[in-house]
Length: 122
Figure 1 (cartoon, helix red, strand yellow):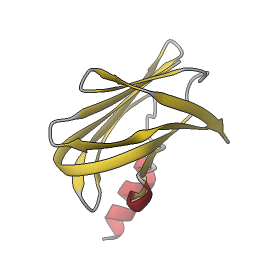
Figure 2 (figure 1 turned 180 degrees about the vertical axis):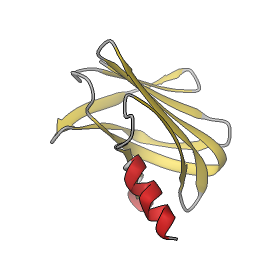
Figure 3 (figure 1 turned 90 degrees about the vertical axis):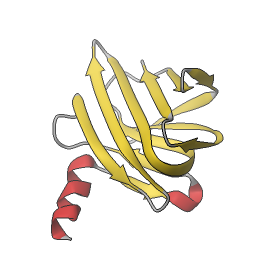
């Protein structure tokens, strides 16, 4: 179990599932990061790349379902605009910067096995 604590710390994973909030703040190669995540209702992968002042992140659900309305990430680029898509379809979202963190909020959505929730932050 103690190795799971190190895993959580390295990925900067946070979760408040009842409130629909998930977050990632990778400590190891945040500009090119990929990791698994586990919630009470699902599991999947999180990936993040930063290149040319653009931060891209992706949540992929491999099992179960996850209801979300906010995703927080470390601010790794000059963040002023966000585009969010779910399986290629635009999701209306708001971007808020606070304490070197980017919070992306949207109307509650459910993502299920096979879904890809993607963020492009500029």
